[in-house]
Length: 270
Image (cartoon, rainbow, N blue to C red; front, top):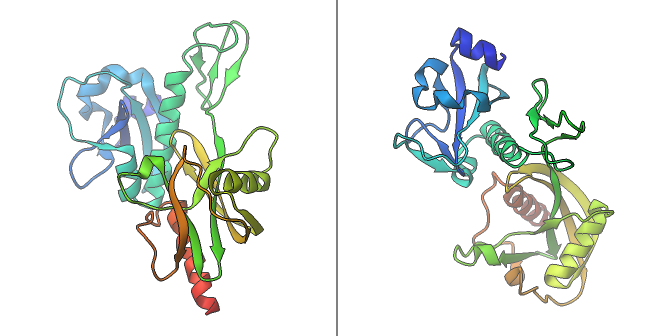
């Protein structure tokens, strides 16, 4: 369904409404609003900010970004991480796309080449400069994430951002220009904990909208070296037996899936 038809025909649809860095929710049980455009009276003046996201449960899904404005009405909201952790896998993809689209539109109002005002293209997610012809698409930043095992142990680390949560996870980092995914795995592991890995195996991937990453997962075997954490990024890193793991991410995240899969494999070898 097009945006124009959704407004004109007032069809029932799902709405993901973003305000600042949070999502407006209809109640404590639901994460997306299922309603007609006519019911969204408090955001009618943001009509130009509507974006088509896809479908969910055979109904159209629209993003409406209210940007950083202070809304007139106090409405319940949920943080993006909370929505991702509590939504279904299908909702996860919609929320991730919604935030990445909202961030893209907020940061591409003006042309990076000539400074002219950009225009949103109406047949794809892109902005276009009518003065110089420069066109921009949502940014996707590839990152690697890797579970490392040694015998019946996993190498897990606590990042500086998780210092207050006590959560340990697998190692991850951005892919640099001119670098392959596999090269990024070896470099990031060496930089963050000072060890070498071997026998890399591709695991899977997951969009991660913090802010616009694509996590590419690997499982790797320890090849040598002593753990030496990079103090700028890692608070603590150590080997943990698969039967005595610390607090780790939930399995909705690719980090949690990597840990769960690697543990299952190692137990099957016993």
